[in-house]
Image 1 (cartoon, rainbow, N blue to C red):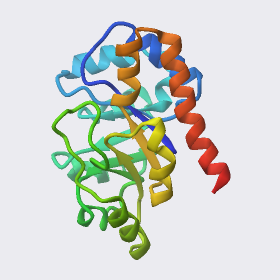
Image 2: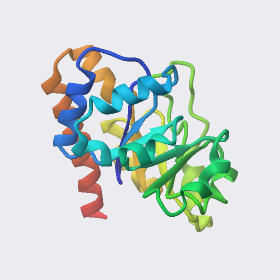
Image 3: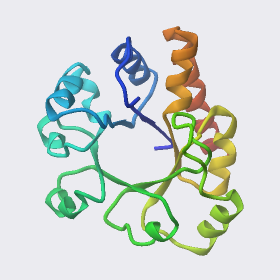
Length: 208
């Protein structure tokens, strides 16, 4: 689970074509998070994804869609995490977001947690880093955690290795990948960038 992709919050041309190519190129974790979507919008989005890739989707917000579409898992929020026991036997992957070290200390029910923003966000201009890399490294050394921790916020090809060396179990990308398409307007160029991101993560795993 070294590399996770989070959906762009807004719709755009060629989104599903890009997503299919990412899956074909090895994407295993795709977080479907569309804040402005209704449940019908989520259903339409999922149904445009080939069924063989549903097993790679982690759904946000409308968590009951997990079982209906045999998805990879559920990302819980503070509003619905009380329901986690309903899915105890069923969900393969359960994740949650955290924004402080204290929040990471008691998450044994979850497979992994996003810690953000690790760096200044690429997709949100005023979403600034709340952490010092040295402080993060010290926290990981001092604490044995019950869940894996994934870095989110400002992740790009240039800082993946540094981020994993700090002690994170994986990285989540959003702005750096989608912005590549918005700038280049070229599907194949963006797919190649995804492949390079994924390869960087895999190289780190083999080296360390």
